[in-house]
Image 1 (cartoon, rainbow, N blue to C red):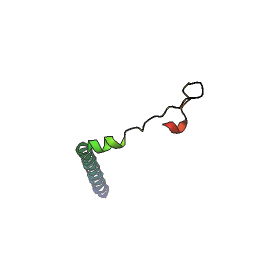
Image 2 (cartoon, rainbow, N blue to C red; image 1 turned 45 degrees about the vertical axis):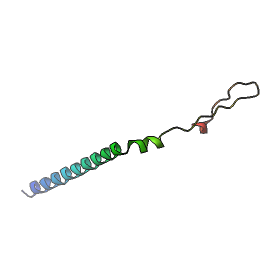
Image 3 (cartoon, helix red, strand yellow; image 1 turned 90 degrees about the horizontal axis):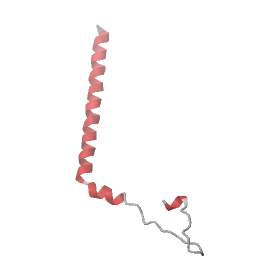
Image 4 (cartoon, rainbow, N blue to C red; image 1 turned 30 degrees about the vertical axis):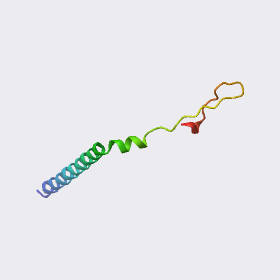
Length: 66
């Protein structure tokens, strides 16, 4: 009988944790809806600069160009 009580308590704790996590996720989703333009401004890629060699051909892009 003691084992049954323990499993019930563990189930309650697990369910409570699941509900809290779900509420946190909903809050984060709501926050993203409220401030979409702020997040979009930071995700813009910077301007790509193409360099040319002496013959006028574009040079390859390096790793740090992205």
